[in-house]
Length: 337
Image: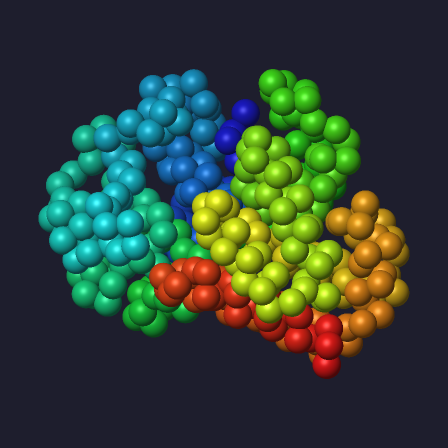
C-alpha cells in the first residue's frame, strides 16, 4: 500500500502527486502550505518515498530499502534541513545544508530531495541564498518548502514553486481515525471525548491526535471553560488572575486560544440558527445559548479576529501575560457593549 493511502483527506494533492508521477512531470520546487499539524511533512515524505522507490509499479512499494529508509528518516538522498536557532533558519543553514551540497550527485537514488520544514523561518538573506538553487537547480534536485503561510516567503521564491495547499480534513474522517487509534492505545477515551477532539481540531489531524494523546488536554479544556463561562461577569482583578494563571501554570497558550476559537465558533453557529449537531462544546449548550443572546454577529467577528491577533502577538514573542490579558479584557467588553 502506498503511504499516500494513509494520508487523510487532501485528495487534490494526492491526485496531483499520482498524476505528476504517472506523466513524469516532476517539478524542482514545491511549496506545501498549511497550519501546523495539517500533514505537510507527511505529504512531502510520501511524495519523496514514491520518487525514490526502488520497486516496480507506479507508486511506492513500501518494502524496498529506499522506502524503508524514507520511513525511518535515514535515506541519504532525502535531506531534512535542520536549524539550531528555534525561530530562525539562517543563511548559513541554507548554504551548508543545501547550496553547498546540491551539486553533489545523489548517493543511490534518482533524486536528491531537500525538505525544509517551517520554511517561513528563513530570513530574507537565507531565502535569497536558496533562490539561486531554485532558479538553476541540478536536474536531480527537488526542494520541498513546508510553510504555514506563503506570504512569509519572497515573491521570487513563490513564483518558482508549485503550490500545494493542504486542505482541512472532514470531521467524520478524523473521528473514524481517532476511534481506530483509541482502540489500539492505552488511554480509555469515551465517545464524547473522541467526538470533541475531532471537532476541536477543525480539520487539523495533528491537533486531534495531540488532543487524544495528551493526558493534560482535559485539564486544560476545563481551565479554558472556567474562563469562558465567567469572562462575561469577570472583574478586572479576576481577568488579570486568569491571565496570570495561564502563564504561571505554563499552560499551552496556543491550545488555550484554539479552545477559545472553538467556543466562539460555536456561538456563531448558534447565532446563525444552525443545527445543534454542529456544536462542539455540546455539554455547554445552555451557557452558549445564553452568551449567544448577548453577542452580535459583529461582536463575534471582532472576537475571532482578536484571538487571531493574540496568536500573532505570541508568535512575535511579546509579553504573554499582557497579550492574554488584553484578549480577556476585549472579550469582557464585547459582552457589555
